[in-house]
Length: 126
Picture (cartoon, rainbow, N blue to C red):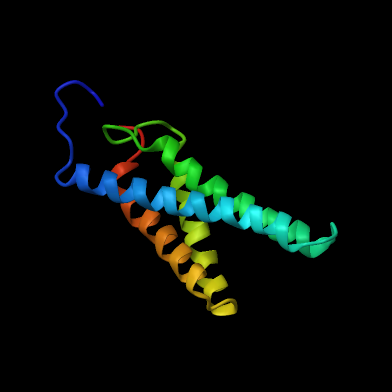
C-alpha cells in the first residue's frame, strides 16, 4: 500500500471474511481430492475428472489466500484472481443445479463470498 494511503472502510472485516471463505474452499478442495483417492477403485475417466475438480477447487481457494494481505493487494495478478473467482462462482452455481447437495451449497456460497470480498481485498494495481 502506498505511503499515506488509508485502508478502505471495513477492510479488516472483509479481509477476515475472505480468509474464512478461502479456507473453506481450500479445505473442500482437499476433501474432494482425498475422496477421489478413497472412492474410486481404479483409475478411470470419472476418477480423473473427480480428482481434477478437487484440484481446481483447491487451486482457486489457495490462489485467493496467497493474495489476501494486511492491506489491499495491489499486485498485477489480482485481475487474474478476480476473473478466476468470477468463473468459478458462475460454474459453481451451474454445478449446484446439477448436484444440489449440502456440501456443494457450502462450496458455492464460499466461492461467491470470495467474489464479493475480492472487490474490497483485491482492488489491483493503483
